[in-house]
Length: 113
Image (cartoon, rainbow, N blue to C red):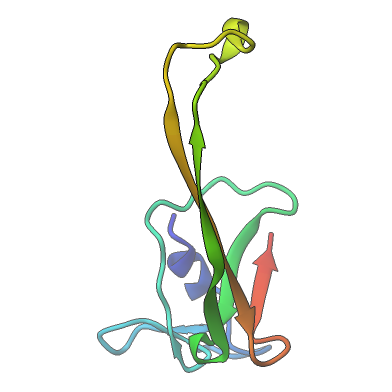
């Protein structure tokens, strides 16, 4: 069962007959905001599993951290049982960092099962 369907059974407040999720428009809404659901989310929930995130993208920023690095490796070693033996290949490695932050404390909330 999808999480939006599960939230349909949760009342908006104690004694309310209205569900928490409003599906009267073209997109479902939760607490006045649009709801998006990932179809790849697992439906099996265990203790402490994260099943819901609520946040405001206008309060977030994504930063690419420079410099990025390019590294030439003249001798690539194998994996597994041959982890210390060279494979006779060379290669280039590129790596960079990026991060996400919030302009407001508490802009995102994660719900746990």
